[in-house]
Image 1 (cartoon, protein in one colour):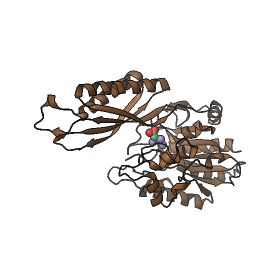
Image 2 (cartoon, rainbow, N blue to C red):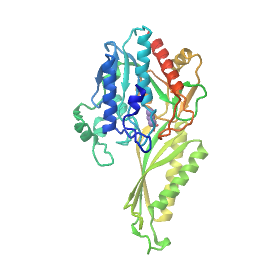
Image 3 (cartoon, rainbow, N blue to C red):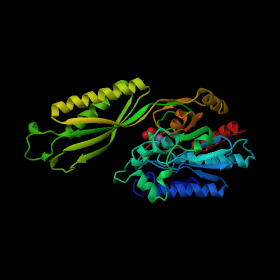
Image 4 (cartoon, protein in one colour):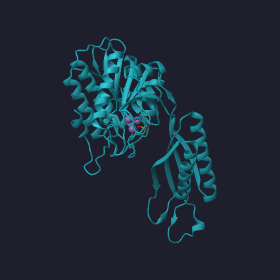
Length: 390
Ligand code: GLV
Ligand code: MN
Ligand code: MN
Ligand code: MN
């Protein structure tokens, strides 16, 4: 099962995956999921944006749902997302082989555009489902080609009019997401999440003056690339000082010619910290330094938050129950965002299991987890589901 799924859309050159929401590779992975559910006789329910839950048992009352996402970042790894979906199906197989019958419906979920790699909004499917992002705002989001989400849904045969808060949430009595850990935070193969750091994506638009690279004196320039570069250095320094994270991982440059001073640089900052106050003061410090630098360079900078994800503390009772089932597995926070965070904030009792990531590399083709650790993850998930659904 893992091999079939992980062959879908793997780039022959990099070994990575680019499965933005509603792209051919992501659709292929979704079709694979639907086939797997059909093979197991699991009835799949979809909501308006395309989040899926496949049910073992009739979902006539709130059940226990586990799952993750099948989309990826640009040139991402094999595990971030798919590990949680494949492990969920494998855990169902394991429980069935043991002869277990859940006393509440047990669901396997696959949630759309978790990474936000196509439309820029992380956890797009779960945010819309939970009603924290309105249908109007979601449908107006555009990808890098200017295609709106509404148009992408139509192209995929989905009526945009159905997008909105999801009835699936009422069926999620409890949600458990298994995920690769992504930060070298685990010594044993499996751990339990305590919290998700607050984080956000902020668009910095630096404006200057396009000019000739050969004839314009250095002191005559209004170069927004320079302002951006100094801002990136400041962000790195401020994040180090705060014990936080700041990343500029995406740029758009106009006119993007080698022999012209740019007129505009748009840079997206991803900032994260262990607590809200630290995140806010980090953003304030980076913005202040960007503004100061812009004044020196004769450029301007405007900062717009594109998405903000508040801190998530997973409910301690459920977390401790998982730790109990797993004989004292370690508990750890994460700096990565997850649909589990959105569902938890929406009031659904939610927990996460992490599988060891020995390299600490993620969001990269080099992302890795040992096969034995993944199998330990499936066993842990099955034990947790059995406990929650007995
Ligand atoms: C998603 O995985 C994120 O945390 O950026
Ligand atoms: Mn990710
Ligand atoms: Mn993920
Ligand atoms: Mn994520």
